[in-house]
Length: 89
Image (cartoon, rainbow, N blue to C red; front, side, top):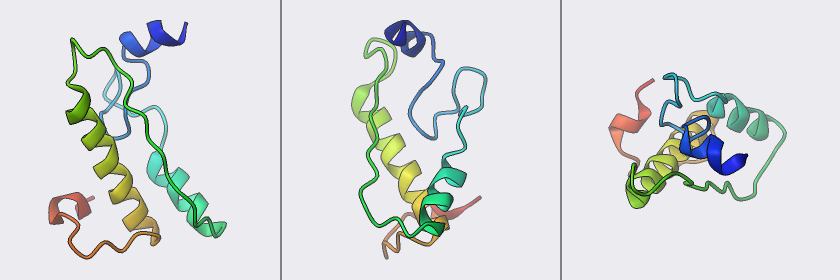
């Protein structure tokens, strides 16, 4: 089930590394493809995980900052004060 998969770490927030140290999905490539198609809408991220194992706000922020990073590198996000550490590849 989806809840069981979430609890076992099969899929986690973008930037967390997933169960085996890989995100499972290449979010940077996904965001880049959206940019190439002229996408100018919202990017929405959900941080669903076991709150007894991972702090919800910490993981919501992780996903948010990762999507900022991916959007910046795709050329669709130009936030002037983006943390320099997020820009490192």
